[in-house]
Amino acid sequence: MSNKVFRVLIAGVCLLAVSVPLPAHHGAAGYDMDKQLTMKGTVREWLWANPHCYMKYDATDEKGNVAHWAAEVSNPTDMIKRGWSLHSFKPGDEIAVTVRPAKNGAPVGQLLKVVLPNGQTLIGWASGLNSPAGGVSNPPEPSSK
Amino acid sequence: MQESIACGKTVLGKQFIGVVAALAFSSGMCAQTAPPQQPEPAKSQKAAPAPRRDLSGIWDVANTMEGISPQGVKSHAPFTAWGADIANNVYKPGDGPRRVLIGRVNDPLDSCDPAGFPRNLLFELRPFQVVQTPNQVLMLYQYQRVWRVIWTDGRELPKDPDPRWYGYSIGRWADDYTFLVETVGLDERTWLDNAGDPHSSELRVEERYVRVDHDTVELTVKIDDPKAYTGPWLARDKLHLTLQPAKTDILEMICAPTEAEAYKKAIADPATK
Image (cartoon, rainbow over all chains, first blue to last red; front, side):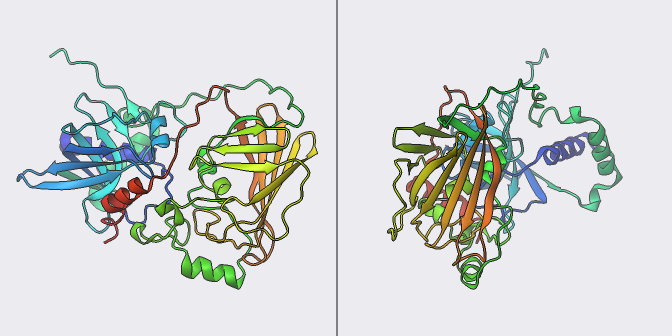
């Protein structure tokens, strides 16, 4: 197993290990709970709103094809507890996104994790509600290299 | 570039099993993605005695998910034929045992209709403030930023009230630490909970707030709706509420129709087609 595949596997398993459902009156019946996609993308819009916050972003594959995605997390009051805010993202931010995609193949999903350019990780649909600092990992120390 | 992880599939093989096993014995491996470990709650000092006939303050459910109850009530009395028909054929909830795909949900909350009472106690019960005046107890809720008036001036419940989203409520102190609230006149259009359990306009609700000590209230909610259920039942049974610091800022949690419509177009509809 290559290091790359191993890293992806570790990330996926870690997410599963801490995953608990966020509340939603809409439920999650449309999402494939057994699948996760990780992709690089560019933020188009970050909507801080009820009933759920969501991000619109563009993901470009190796052939240059652009897919317009939208992925949701919970409402602002829940996400504040996880360290998210109205200002977490802005258009043009380059991010790495992990989502639980729709079963029907549409480019929508539940936003599980976002890695910002500075290395900070925001956990979406995958951590404890009662954690005041939950959902945020500190960016790594600047590399000396 | 996309990388797909089909969890649990056999293609992951022995190495996957090894990783899982390693994780099982090494929580530190998830340090980059897992939330910080919660500190063990300190053994709290014994709470001060409860004040007499006083619920004033900001309260929150000790177990957040229990307050939110996304999957509806834990159990309920059997439906009547009327209740079963509504539950099985009319209401299309997004969660609970009868959940449907997100775009097919017909929950009134989707269009920002009021949650109403008692759904606001059985779904998304988050921080709320209690204010006591000489003749009323006011309850101010975070979810949908609504309030209820509970009359404590000795009046009786109306005999044949027109329905209201939050009904008519009267309250009295059964003893120095137990506040009882009765509510009638409830609008049949509201759902009882997030699982699409129905109620009728015949619904009567009894809330019992027991001030166990200075920091704790136990909330019990009894449902009595002979048109929808075959007998009375408890929708909340001694739900623990914890007194919050006086400086707690109750956040807005408002459904705005324009935002709800935008969410439907961006997320709900595409996920359902």
